[in-house]
Image 1 (tube, rainbow, N blue to C red):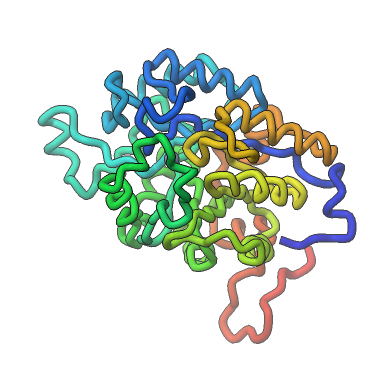
Image 2 (tube, rainbow, N blue to C red; image 1 turned 135 degrees about the vertical axis):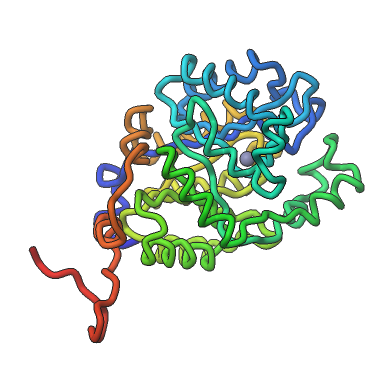
Length: 351
Ligand SMILES: [Zn+2]
């Protein structure tokens, strides 16, 4: 992204889109007072987050017994209720779910490896599904301190060991097919990128014409295979992000607050919620709503406007897809693909 002399002035920055992840599937209901379990509580949490200023909802669903749901039907029910309760929010389903077949017909239709493609079959369809690019380690324990997990299920060494070895599977054969299926259903892929190599792969997919549409990104700085917390890495990622992309900074634990403060100052967007941290900047427990309120306060201090639901849809360009690699590169402000025999940096001809 380019920064002109006046790019840090709030009136020249896009309004702030606050993503919230209030469901925290890695936690058990006893880990926090802020974990909604029943369908009604989960929907109410979305309403509370929207009223506090969040306009993008990262959706996971819990079963009545408190466990993370793997049933497509539960997600469909939740999405239908969310469309009623928070009609202006951008609904973003977390793409890490492997749905379990609910009957023999589904078991026959979906091979085990393919069950994540069922995200493209959600009905009503969400605005977005998150897509990780390239298989990577997701050791969320690496940056966790004892204080971060004290009094939660993640303090249990056996559970820690399982989370330490967690892998995000996204081989090229899978993510290329997945992007195609999402786009065919009009669902926007929201790319979750742990470092520059992921951004480079997405750029290659765009240049090769595999994906043509708005480039909506989270920089996921959670360590353990993804980027860590060095601000220079974040700044370099920002520098390498195309001008027309929409970039949100995501990290975990109390670092969410200083990293988000930098993101707000830079004109980027933020993500908060108990999926990322149970604590506020002072080390005291903070609910998802309180975390949103903190973001709104920081934005106000810098005179940065907070996006409404309509703004969030406009900024994210939900439901928008383009026709070719050339159009996508142009709309994102990226240099065109090289033409045969062309030397030097390929520039866009003046109209
Ligand atoms: Zn998630």
